[in-house]
Length: 363
Ligand code: MRU
Image 1 (cartoon, rainbow, N blue to C red):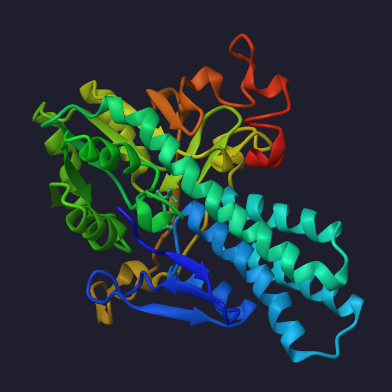
Image 2: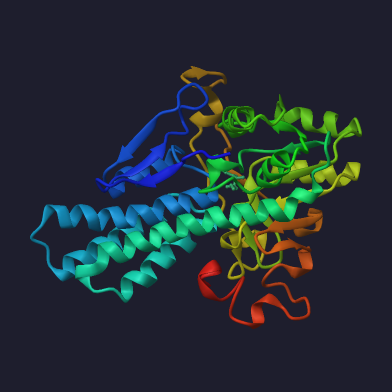
């Protein structure tokens, strides 16, 4: 299950798989300026919480690389360009904390690098963020794979697969690894209005990996859950607050409420870069509002009268609706989320590694 979503090319560009064109076209685009990287993130050419963090990190390295190619630059110019790149990229999308997490790491290594080695240092860090994300995805897969029983039927929303990350995904990782072990689950994919990440992206990557999947519209989830044949629901996350509340693609909250009603387990899969102990509750998570055209049109076709549109890209699912988190450090209960008062004996946050310490979390 390898999809190359992003790479830093030998010629100093950020090469992305343009996800706006899927599933019709598998087209790679070379981004050659911070502005191009920022616009790619804003327009969802690259999307998914972990992947936008990786793209932003590569964008910072790209900025310095292009500056050096131009030549005749002083030390102050290098620092100014790094700061400007970080500021522009930080402003692209507000909800996924992985973006800030990656940019904080880039700012931190830039602060202690000298101007001459800045590009090398930044590129090394961006590549490390990419590689670490791939490793975290695999560990999420390993933690969640035992949940996947052969022949089970599960529901997912949006795209939290390989396309959203630098590896095999988060929510889809357990399904891919179980598939490699011969245990195939059927994935019921919610289309995910308005931008159709489920229909366009999740079906595309599952189908090319040989994982059975069935598409349905978002409004069909209740009916399907009421049938009684859904084993569990799994989604990704854009930010997990200290109390365990989860921001994820709009529609996740409704799905979690339905799962609770029908007694179906509801799992959230996420790497440690998505946990944000600095944000107390879901109410403190900034929710991105997107353009009205995304709802009022399909493609170029207008589908509604010219009326106001409410278009939040994400919603917040209260921790109480979540059965467990599937993370790169294993399955954890809501009370074990970093930042909650209850910490398991030998807690992760006491030793300077794992959630709080080291590079895995960076806060
Ligand atoms: O607007 P998007 O497509 O970037 O939203 C993506 C999601 O909501 C994903 O579920 C989330 O980022 C987790 S991806 C591993």
